[in-house]
Image (cartoon, rainbow over all chains, first blue to last red; front, side):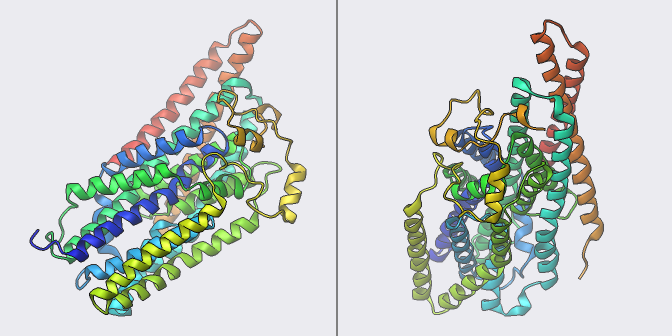
Length: 413
Length: 73
């Protein structure tokens, strides 16, 4: 710990800020289906997810140890490069949150690292093959795998569960959704909180504060865990709305099938050596569940916007990071300019978001989320009228009760 | 560049089988419980269905436990 310089402190703070955005950006992955089907009340859901993220952060440091060594050459990385990378990743996360699109925080971080590295050390320092195998192929594979699994599972649960009705099935599907959402939260904590730990550790190594190849120090683990949990608890309600209500209308059976599929894909992929993005898996699973129900409709306009965002994530974060890296190259005042730019644009995005607030009170309210297109109108024609029956045990929240389109399980075939 | 198709294939296969199996088990469990609900409402009992239901839920709980083990390990 001989030199804990100012730039290092800035990097650590920025990394924690990224961790925070990662948390609220990805709450939707674990909790969107649970919230939209009424299995849990919004606030309770995000609180549970936050706690599990925090717990997950302490479970292992394996991911943290791999991130620094995979994508870019560790040698020659300066703290400024990591700072620039984080600026790109944070801004992309905030921007996609503003428009309510789920996108992979990991891709944003990788894009940022790649862009900043290219600007600093040239194209040669990026491992192109790693880019294809770790980023491009998983991005295509994840929604397909999770989607197909969720679609088949949805079909199956509807046909097997024809005779299941009443309180027992209501409670059952609720419990199932909560369990699978909990697993996703826990897995997210171990994965994504650790990515930040990895980045902070990388910065500490680059700044000479800790020896190369060392595990993240305890204060890094603690602060990263807390940052992601706080972000999760804040809740990215805009993205939750898109994922839980925007892509398709989910009934409890579908929510259960989707979340189970997502949890399985995430765990299977990370342990069979082909890591898939949580965001992509969950989005794919939700769409698969939408297709699996008779009369279920996926809103492809929303899905297309989401796919575009996925495609842009890496290059956009890379571009911002490369620019940021270029500016920090001018010396201390350049770094200061970038820092001010980050704070000002974050504040601006937050300010814009206040024009139309989305929070736990109106997260399930989709009426103004998308202009009625052909698909949406056709959807409305086949959707049963509001019944609000699934949340029988839960005292109805006004906004939720009016938006609750989910018919009780007895009316589904 | 080496793309690990075998790993991707096994992720696909395992995810598909596990998801479908878990959802099927869970749905059977729910069906069993809701049969008991009906039986109780009609004054009868449905011992076999309930036993089966709890067996299904136990299997699902085991799967969740294994999932947590995978996360921790």
